[in-house]
Amino acid sequence: MRLFLFTLFCCLLISSHAYSQTIAMPGTVDESSLPPTLLKEVMKRAGITPSFPYSNIKGGDLSFNRMKQDIISGKIDVFWTMTSRELEQEFNAIYIPIFRGLLGMRIPLVKQENVNMFADINSLSELQEFKAGSGKTWSDTKILEHNGLPVVKTLKYQNLFPMLEGERFDYFPRGLHEPWQEIIDHKELNLAVEKNVMLRYTAPNYFFVAKDNPQLAKQLTILLNELISSGDFVELFFQDNEVKNAINKANVKNRIVFEIDNPTLSENTPLNRKELWFDPLEVQGK
Image 1 (cartoon, rainbow, N blue to C red):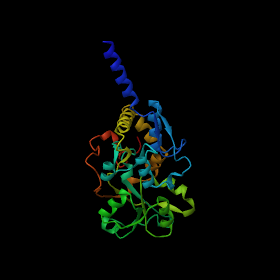
Image 2: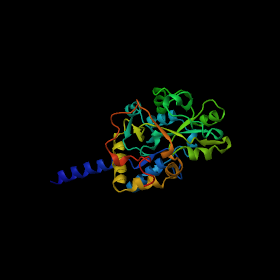
Image 3: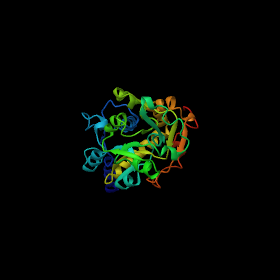
Image 4: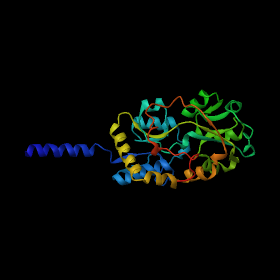
């Protein structure tokens, strides 16, 4: 009996230490955007210590490919991005859309003088006459091109803003929550949000961890679902400044919405979990 209890105790001890007690993540300790806020909240509740290997690197200067390589090498344990079938095959996805669907609602960032560029656009075929800007390796680019929308591409996110101002392309489609802070960050470029159209496709933004770290994927899934069950996930979502801007400034009900197909979406997308999604076309605010 003593041997059995000792063996059981050892198994429980090993099991408890199988979960991560330190998680290396992008960003900085004081970063307040929604993805790191959610991660830091679940880590705090679970007694996990976050670390920030990129503390001296501005988020926009960190390439997507760099993060992917650093996950594989173990420099960081988790990152977040818009999903695709390829990413879900390469990494373990935590199937909870961080921005509750807002990322797939795309409004155009344009030069200030072009805020009404699409005032007379009534069909997708008319929008196809204009050039979008996007990242060369982004899933968004595949989606836009799949739907016949011309795309000018670059490897670096930060390059897209001066390229837009320099008229290398006509508009930069941004997730509903994204452009307001980007305009502030690039105030020298005189950018604005176009007022008349919105592209919409299902495009969850997930947390991802290395393929060889299923325990961390399981741990984060459990912790985030606990945050959802308690109502705190939704609370943090609506407290986020980017989300507030999306709800208060995007004026989605007065835009023409073009529904387009996402060929990169996997069958694992949790479309049946209605509590994970938010549609500002149906409800303004909470």
